Length: 285
Length: 285
Image (cartoon, rainbow over all chains, first blue to last red; front, side):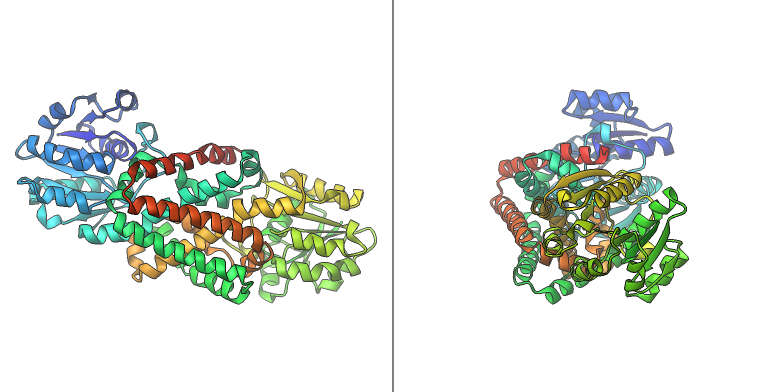
């Protein structure tokens, strides 16, 4: 079986690495606009060869779309046009609403599976890909009833073999939840990074005084702007609501601190402490 | 040598654990308003005995004040009153301005050393204490010229033996920097936890959809309200400024997203990416 990875970055590369281990005979073709990324993916053994998009698609039983979501949306109709009759295309994008709209408008919708692995790091590119990114994590598949039985079964079995747990929902549910449990975390980290950088012109002071708590909270501010700008744009209604709610809590807390209202401050944090149960649940996954 | 740990929690307990390893003959007395904490500290081998405050202080060459900062401020004058002539008291509080004001007003100021280890986790109590919390981390000492030579030398050598690097600054500098590199991170995490909990009434959805990025950003929301409320209160002017700057960046970013201004969104995140250099520096420490 031949699999093309379109966009050989953290996610596409990590998916290929775990599949190669499970299926030593599977053939992987890489497609990337960056020549350097292609060479790196070959050198790292992520793919067997690098080809132009149309040549790769023509030879593939499975096409994995793992580019930033703006590129993904533009590529999907072209790929569906060129896709062999019995082949399947799956996307790994972090937004699902617009991409599913694009797919729904295509006559070959049933050859497409909309997927999103709940996994990532703050690093990007094929150099960041690693075997253990996906195993043990969750995969969300949207609108599964719109994919044909064979395409759905292929995608489900490959991701299950990659060690993932499968969940199903609508694109609308997906995008709403993700705004809160992922997109908002990234914006909070980017803004925190900017606030500290603006204040602490002297980076040495941050080195000397920041502890592991700071690193943990700000880590996501290292994430790729090229990947995240289109995610925030495509999911802007939900992200904007989430941000408004977050800013509101921050303003409430600021008021409490300014008013020296220690009991209210305690109450605020005690309510937030409930997240411990949730985080312990996530870590046990 | 006899050392009293007043407040046998994460920080006081971890300090005792590493010192016991370096100085097997050192005797440790624990003081804690919680009977359970005292028993736990004995059972875990953090202290040799648990005594009331005045008995502990009377026998100690070194008193380590490791309570929440509001308690610390109230205890310091009493402890200085009761302290043997050649003994030393050091505090480990996360704010330094008010505590140094209190110390400055006491005739025995020179027996006091104001210190703050840049180390912590989201967990608290003696059960959370561990040997490796302090080694490799930084310690800030404030107003060292106000401590007598023997007290300063004792505190410096013990923390150096605990594997810490020492830095010196004024209480004012300390509190300003800490608002940005620590206190703000905690508030951002508490508010993020509240935002997600408010939206996601169904905790199962968070379990299924949140990834490691979410956990990392929200982790500090598990922190102890009893510890943090007085820190935010004592450092409220700086914390309020930092929060205002942070809210301002979030509002700017929300505007950019609402306006679908992808180039501005990219620019915002590229600037935040500069934090990568800082974080890599912290992780290499």
